[in-house]
Amino acid sequence: MMSGGYTSIDNQKVSGSVPAVSDSGRVPVQFTDSGLQSFPPSGVQGKISGRAQPPRDADDSFSRPAGGSPRGFDESQGGGWLHKFTVAAYKPYFDVDTSDVLDRLKESLYPFRGTFTEKTATNPDLYGPFWICSTLIFVAAAIGTFVTYIAHKLRNKEWNYDVNLITWSAGVFYGYVTVVPLFLYVILKYFSAPSGLVQLFCLYGYSLFIFIPAMCLSVVPLEIFRWIIAGVAGFMSATFVALNLKAHITSAGESWFLIVAGIFLLQLALAVVLKLYLFTVSV
Image 1 (spheres, one colour):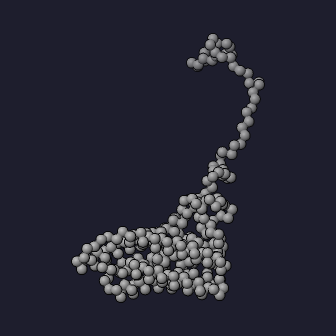
Image 2 (cartoon, one colour):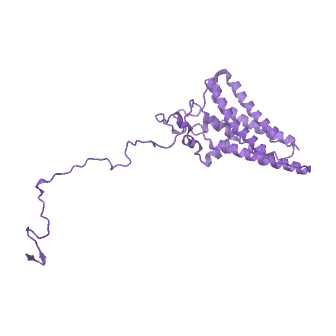
Image 3 (cartoon, rainbow, N blue to C red):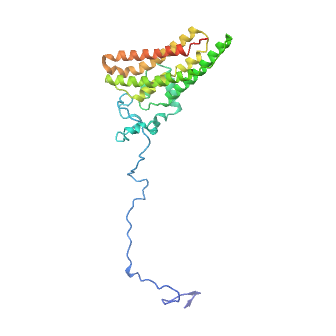
C-alpha cells in the first residue's frame, strides 16, 4: 500500500526475511553492582600502600616530637626488620630541599644557640652529612696537594703526589661520622637517655662543616696561623655538638657532665688530628 510516497509492508512473509520473534518469553537480565563507578576503591589492598617511610629507631625519644612520630611514621605500618636493608627505607632521609640544607649549614656556624636538634627533630637528613664528608675529602686532597706542591717548588725540591691523602681523609671523615654516633647511641642507651640514631648522624655530619673553610685557610704558610684556625674550628665544632646534646643528656643523671665533656674533648681531638696530618706541610 502506497501513502504519501512511502510504502508500508504489512505483517506478512517476505522472501529472504527472518520472522519476528515473539517477546512473550522475554527474560530480564540482572547486573550486579561491581563498584567500579568509584575509583580508586576505598579499601586498596596490595604491596604498594603509600610512600616509603624511614626506618624507625628503636629508641627515638630524641628525634621524635612530643606529639607524634618522626616524618609522619605510622605505627600501624611495618615491613619487618628486613625493610631497613632496602634503599627505599632510607630514601626519605635524602629528600630535603636546598633551603633546608642551607639553614642547617648556617645553624652549624652558630654553635652557642644549641637549637639545631630542635629544628631537625622531625626531619633529620643524611643528605647534608654525606656531601659534607665528601666535600671535606675533596678539599683535603686538593688543598693538601696544592700546599705541599708550592712548598716543594719554593725550595726547589722534587714533589710527588701522595695518593694516600684521599684514602686517609675518606677513612677519617666517613669513619668518624659513622662510628662516633653509633658509639654514643649505645652509651646514651646504657644511661637510660636513648636518642635517635639518625639524629646523631645528622648532628655529627653538620658539625664537620666548619672544617671546610678552615682547610681552605690553611694555605697560609704560617704555622701559628694554622694552629689558630684548627683550634677555632675544633672549638666551634665541639661546642656545637656538646650544647645540642646537653639538654637531652641531662636526663642521664649525674653522669651527664662526663658524657658531655667526653663529646667535647673527642671533637677537639679530631681537630688536633686534622691539624697534624692535613694542616701541616713537611718538605
